[in-house]
Image (cartoon, rainbow over the protein chains, first blue to last red):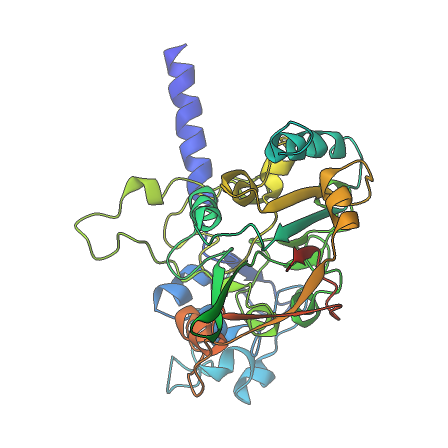
Length: 101
Length: 275
């Protein structure tokens, strides 16, 4: 009985940890021709970014921006607003920084 | 007192009858002749919603008019007006039922302007759009910040919209828009909104205006009511809005001077008796 309770407690603790997210949590992008990209709110907010730095001038929600293209980013839009090699690492070049298998 | 009963008892009976109705039309009536600006409503609200520094759902404005010795003071509590035509919802880039914010037309939340913290993106457009300065962004601050320890009572969950929201940085609702919701979580349990229950002067009436037997409907029929058209004052020009605090400063949240009229384009659901 005690064992069952402790397992339940551990599960509950894990569940509460999983739901502990910043804003929209992790946002997954699955492009057809490249590896998956995970955008982490934790990482970005953790750097001291404010919600208003991106919302809603650069990005609204995934349902409203389900297509994000590299061409856009290269022109300084979408992720490219900051990821331009000046404010943050550039989107050109090392694909594996963002695209994971 | 109303018919030998405390108004609060009558209001609670009205609410318990209203929640049996599937879509009650909630409204609040505030009798400014009775308000003494004791701010028990503000304190009760902060305790109930665990609102952090910089967020105040129900301020009480204090105005003085005339010249000595003919001076008058007026005290105006200002909850969210739960507009039938809400400008805050109109500007939301993620609006819609179940999305970031919407005007509810269903169930017990009928007539309340709702916020879904999990969908709000914290852009702050609603904060600027609200003519009553009733919305603010939660900056994530604690009253006991910069003390040896952030106290546990500040981290206890609030129960807004019937969900537990523990306050642990940087979890929700930190970063999102926050405002009064007529204590929907209390209404669902047949309880009186916190500000109404703490009002020592019994200046508040609350209930379903579609029920002619409710106290609020009766008092509204017997008195001339006005609507708030906007709230002025407090805004600091030229401030950038790069953070929740800076946005509040630019907007002048939570405002200073209420403006009343016979009607308002926003169609508020909070009515006032001025004199």
